[in-house]
Length: 217
Image (cartoon, rainbow, N blue to C red; front, side, top):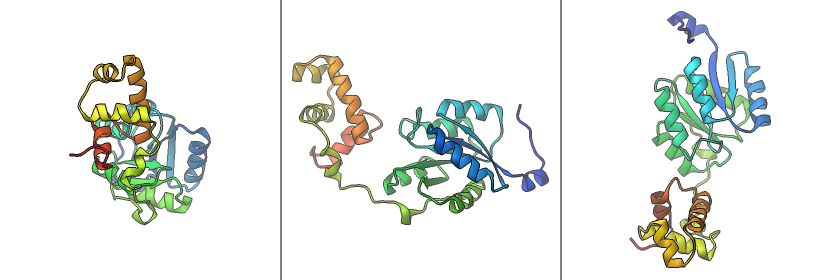
């Protein structure tokens, strides 16, 4: 059952942060170091669903989500958390420190984008700022996205053929017929494509291909 604090109590209370990360050692280390500050109380969980469960049972001043943990599905996990707790600031933390990813997270309503390489003192300061709703995104630390054509270099010939079919608006069944393979094979290729390209869905994959110059507008 959630407990409500008075304005005076809340002002003097420590920051309550929900940390969601699937790497046990990282989660435990951050919880210990941040918790030792004295002004931050950390509750840690290992996934999006357990984060949602915790939000339903307790009050938090900030939620910090690992970008690559189970259930995030790109930034869909961020959207789910924000929908479940619209008044709680939510930030994204990632070992992938790309500028475009940070900008997309902020556009989806995150109050911050935290590189996992951030030092502990800077992290503590960032947590306290984000808990008040202040935006935190150290753009000077973030890498620019790779050149557009670089995202296609890791694709096999077959994966490129499947991607071309997706860009043409074809279904898995149609692509399978064109390539004379089973539809389940195409589904596996689509899944691999999404992982390699960092695509959220088929439309996003087609957009990435188009931006990389693979497909003419």
